[in-house]
Image 1: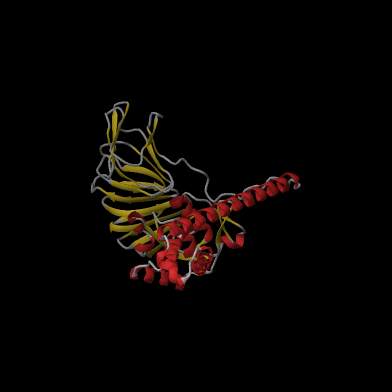
Image 2: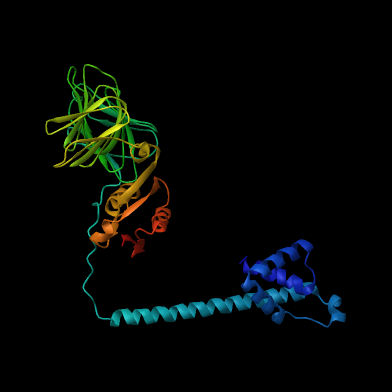
Length: 375
């Protein structure tokens, strides 16, 4: 319903016959669609001071109108007072019930799918010093004789010779991602809840090696004499040039997806050669499997969206934990095994995603005591 005061004003003018054609049309529309407005119309007519028809145009219209407004304010104050008294009585009743009710043992929260994590991007230097980096804006940091720069595109470094070759670590918190420019010119795009260990400068003549926990997209600077190797969980991904995605959120279940160039995935002394459009998977006690992949389900996360098809609710909970920093509590093992499909945008409201999943009717997500559950 429109603002009550405005509706009353229109109704008062209707009673006194001072409505303009536009105001009459607006009032008619409101009355046609609002039962509350029609009830107000009856109330205004009952409370309005009227005069016999022959005397109507001789009355003080402004005085009558102000009297109606005065009565409206009195009624409004009375309603507010009644609501406050009712609310106070309800609070007193609830308080007495709370203190009189027998105490139950304190509930134990279900195990979270992923543990709480730091909410700032952390850069740990080889010497043990750590900086917490801001999310936005141009930034520069000085650690020892190394300068760290961060802008809207990349995190980059200018190390001295003394700081060049130790292992540094960049950790990305939930809901965030970061592009990183390595010393050889290779670009790395780290997904949420991921960690990359790397040197500021690769040794001359040796392999270019980094260690990944989580997920990252690599655009490798070409160097035929120095292979680029990503140690991801129990797998190693090697190339001399090109781009690929490495998913190692689970160290015992690693997937490498090749976008350009050629690469080799190796584990347990076995190797699989990969070409653009192919991906290989390494899982514990399973042979290396190679298939074609759909980029929608593999690499679109770098553009801020993820497609998922028949994903278990348990895995879906891992995904929402990384992208929304919200733990999904699964009510039973059966609920965790149910399948969901859909699409996530990184910046969409979580409630929209919950509604989207519930419309599938394969599982039910619901909020309880501020926590998201699946049943």
